[in-house]
Amino acid sequence: MSSDPWGRVDETGTVYVRTADGEQVVGSWQAGSPEEALAYFERKYEGIVVEIGLLERRVKTTDLSAKDATTAIEHLRLQVDEHHAVGDLDALRKRLDALVATVDSRREERKAQKAKQTDEAKHAKEALVTEAEELAQSEQWRSAGERLRALVDTWKSLPRLDRKSDDELWHRFSHARSAFSKRRKAHFASLDAQREEARKAKEKLVVEAESLSGSTDWGATAARYRDLMTEWKAAGRAQREAEDDLWNRFRGAQDVFFAARGEVFAERDAEQGENLKLKEELAVEAERLVPVKDLKAARAAFRAINERWEAVGHVPRDARPKVEGRMHAVERALQEAEESEWRRTNPEARARAAGLTGQLQAAVDKLRSQIDTARASGNNARADKLAKELEGRQALLDQALKGLEEFGG
Image 1 (tube, rainbow, N blue to C red):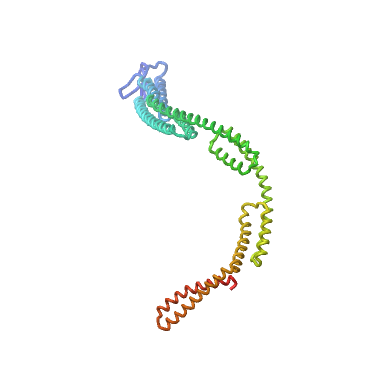
Image 2 (tube, rainbow, N blue to C red; image 1 turned 90 degrees about the vertical axis):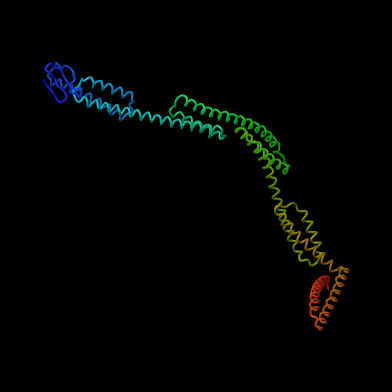
């Protein structure tokens, strides 16, 4: 008979294993010595140990499902319970029990994790639905459309919920996308109609612009082109290709007109520049008449200069006020000289001025005499009153004397 701490072989070749419940028959061995029998069944034990070790690592380090792990544990437990190995079978049972607990714990963890993921997915999908419903009212057609397409990709990346919840949320999500697409389609249909109306309106503007391109009525035609441009802007945009083609025609017609006008105006500006030089020379000649010494000769000279002035054509508009102002200044100087001469030579006016001067002189002399009398008698109050009156009369007298001087004194 042969034995070791975990098993023995009796005289009949029966192999036993020791367990907490006592010895259990492992099997019968007739092919060799008892030592060989124990070594064989110990190797079977080691094989089970290896398998349990591998399963423990798979449970801990891989995503082995609880179902597959449980099946593997039951298969190993069956091998242990059948007692076809020699070794510490109770220790193996404890390891398998611990592995069952680990798998159960992992199952609960995964269940909780799945519940959490499902809850997160539900909230995420609800957020997508809310955003999609908000975007459905947007008029930012391009950006909102791109965002809705991105939301679909996000939706597809999320795990499915239970069928009822998933279907309800998808229905709202899909409805929001459809509502946006319907509104966008209606908007662009309306926009197409507006662009067609704009095309028709601009076609008419182009026809008129082209008909005006050969006009030589510079002012009226330029004004009409400005009106046409205002109408063009108010008409809105046509389809892109039509818009570009119409604009090129419209702008081309304007360019033809304004180029022709520009050539004419350039010639006119050159002519007016020469006219300005002539008028500036005439202004210098007229300014030499001031100050006026011989009124009659100055008048005759100014008329001759003015006749030559009128014979000269237009000058540039921005230069006109300055050069005309110089001629007007000379004309005013001649008028003032004429008025002064008239006053000086008018006998009636001279007589009136002399009479007034005489009256004022008499009044001043009288007031001075009264003041002297009042002061001599000690009546200073009356003297002061008369002195104030004298100031006013004296001022009038000074003015009258100045006017009389203009008549040659």
